[in-house]
Length: 280
View 1 (tube, one colour):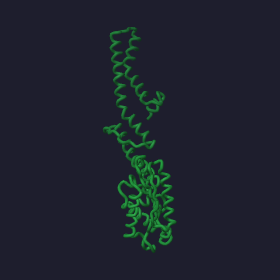
View 2 (view 1 turned 30 degrees about the vertical axis):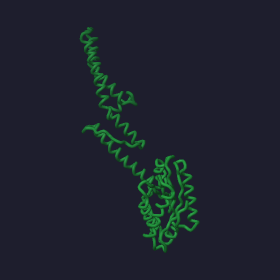
View 3 (view 1 turned 135 degrees about the vertical axis):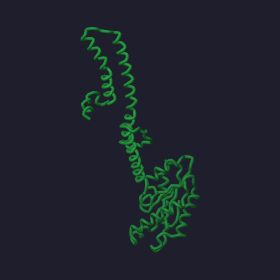
View 4 (view 1 turned 180 degrees about the vertical axis):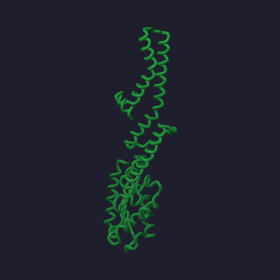
């Protein structure tokens, strides 16, 4: 570190140029010594000077080119470290040999792997509901965007568990959480692979059924309802768990917010009409 610090006055912002300057000076030492000797003896031999000058220039160019090539992995590692600092993902880190540069590249590779894993965990936590394992509101909206195009019709469904507060009040929040997890599991089992589901908040769930009309969407939701009747959840609360549902059509992403608002209005209509039903 002492020599590094002592030479920082040479191109303090560019390590490459500092190294090239030192290399240039070292390679030219024989030529400088020759010139000094010729000056002292007061004799100048052009036949020696010209070949020596040519050899020095050629050696300098070759040395600078070789050093530049050897420093390329270091420059690449520096770029990768900047990307890590900005939180960008690094697809691949080149492997180095059993030397100083190799150790540097392996260190960058380890840091890249750890950073990528951390980014994945943060992204997963940001878009996933930790209780039910479904997407949360943000994850749902991010996943919905590429599925809605102007030439495709989709149905948005908003589901709300009926009398869920009574379960929490009577049996506690742990029992309520278990009901939410079980309902999320049943919901996933009733939907198709192309459908998206999310916990919208509290006991409310959102579903997108792409390339689907209202009649088909209603059949899918009613299949879930039939499953709850055949195999009830939280029957000990005095009644089997039921849900209310509102549905609306979304024709592209621009109309998604309006469709979700219409589905929410239909959901409240189902609640006021006596619950345990689907309305559009």
